[in-house]
Image 1 (tube, rainbow, N blue to C red):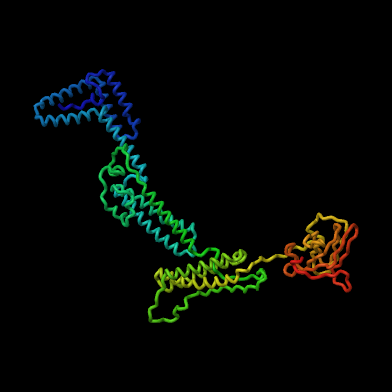
Image 2 (image 1 turned 180 degrees about the horizontal axis):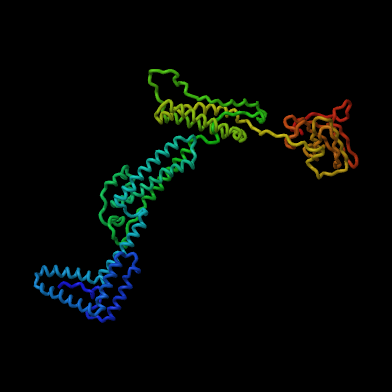
Length: 543
């Protein structure tokens, strides 16, 4: 027999329950289902209204009596229909079970629905929190909504990055890496979407590597219900307790793709001419001197010109016959050989020569590349053919430059020296030297002198050196001993290292001078007839 839904059922008490029992049941249910305690349950307020209505009726004796009479009337009607067929009775039994479940909402169904709703809320939170995980599934509508704009962004980035890379005169690793990441980020996001969509079709992520399979996923039907990769994203209520297959193909694809791109960037940077060996002209400064290890003076570098080198077979008039377009592979091979050759020559130069030529070489290399690139574009609108013409344009210039640099292999460039302030007479390299043997040196006006006093038995053993201005006299005391006087002289002072520069002249007194206590010499570095101190000119190595 069908059970009637009553307020007793809603409070979970018997029909003969005392008011104290009704109050206790109401208090327990109110604490459990009050909306303040269940902010995430949208049914909490409705359930609480049912509980309040049941309590208000049962706690009031008059209202409770009317409710009991209504229950009896409803039960009498049900008893009048007790002679129904067995099938109807079975159906009625099923309805009673359903109604009983609904009537006992606060005890059974209310609790189940509340748990279900909480489970739904928690599951929705779990599903949201895992939306950006590489595991799990993605429905077709979400894939289309995110995938189509991503494809557009990817091709836009790819075209832009390719154009920027082709316009570079020289490749820089950091710049190419930035362009690569700019291009690949939308591609990786597309892989991410495609793999989750493949999971929705019960497929592993490796399927997205098949050409055009990313587009096939727009039309492939999904697996209905739960599959090995997760719950159906179209269902709102799922059981989070189940374990699913973890799939890491996304990270393998991204890692391998990144590695390949890094190798390509490194190869592109390595195959281009080195920044330090950019070919250019040289303009020799008159203030620079060269040291060529006693070899003939190298020829003066040619002044850079702005002429563009072009192949000799370039037609100057219009011809009717068809010309053969150059092969890009052949042209690139010749260009690489020319670059490797000039790289080898450049690395063999003295560091001073490389430093001296570096800026000018960069400038002329940039000019050469721009001119040859323009020449190639004028020869053909086909990108590969134009690049072949460009390489053929650069090859003779690179080889010619390498030939010139070969002539500079034995050259050493010394930076110009600057004049120094003229020291006072008596300036010395050994101010703490003391002695008791006097020495006086007089000079004539004009040249200045750097006098070096060395031991007679070992001329490499210097005792002391002094500076004497032209026309002035030096008075000093030396330790006792036998010495030889050497001196360098000139007009412009460049410091102790360079003395009087390229115009320094050197001389040496022929006589050994013997200094002892209170016994010394007076020397006049003035050319005189019948002078008693003979001197001999020497070179720098003997000084």
